[in-house]
Image (cartoon, rainbow, N blue to C red; front, top):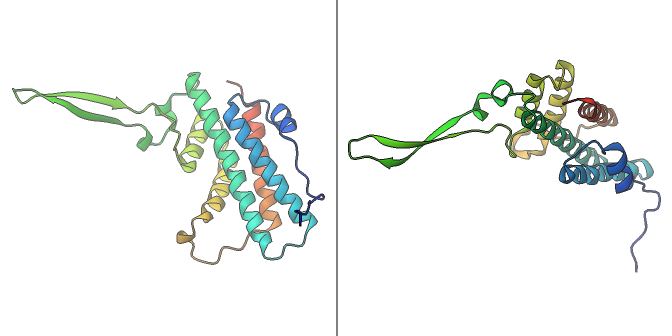
Length: 198
């Protein structure tokens, strides 16, 4: 028996997204990953709209939140990186203190008790930077307004519910309204990044 084709499920083509909605992203790896996430989110929405999924609806909404947050985080991270590389912002002015550090390492001890030290200074935006630090840096840089920063923080908080060990109650509370708010924030971030001139 062959697989059933879900012909009611729709999602945009890769080309329509990468050459259209996300053509402003110069980083091809980021662009392609965002396109994949948008296709997946659209697939989940279509699945929810076309089929009665019962309790699975919650998991679909949670996946939508997680992948939308990843899009926001990726776009902000990339734009901050571009702003630093173009010298529009200085990392020391926008990053939390734990991302602005210098580390000294003794590489040789001399006979007179003195040391030869190598000093390593952080370059700024790191690949493994956490979402909260990215949001704060984006606000300090002027990329995010206070209102948009708060919305990004709401999405980040919702996304963090992926960590089951930190939950204090059953996490089955996402609604269509929550998803629409996440979409609105994502849309605003996309437009912010697209229209922000370096």
